[in-house]
Length: 77
Image 1 (cartoon, one colour):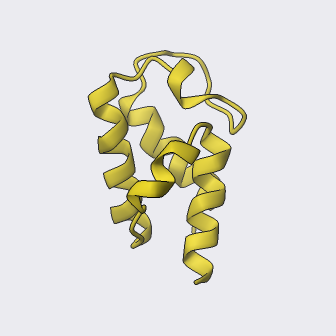
Image 2: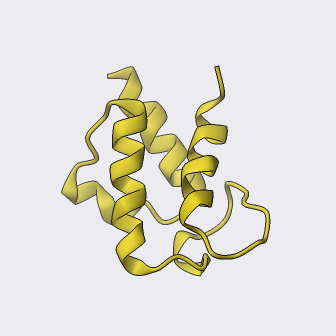
Image 3: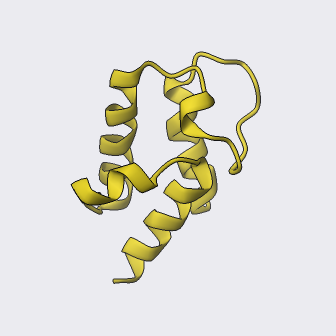
């Protein structure tokens, strides 16, 4: 099975218009992603991992790594 990081990078890569390689330290708002697609990414992450991202947590998801960490924490509970 692919790692959490690889799966999240694949999801984000589907929505990112930039051809630059993605890495965990990247800021989501610096990627070439339409703002409407950010919510599509969140929905895709929720579906992929069977979690629910709480509305109050959305603002803390600023980097790819923060999304990875959130998913891993959510899967432990």
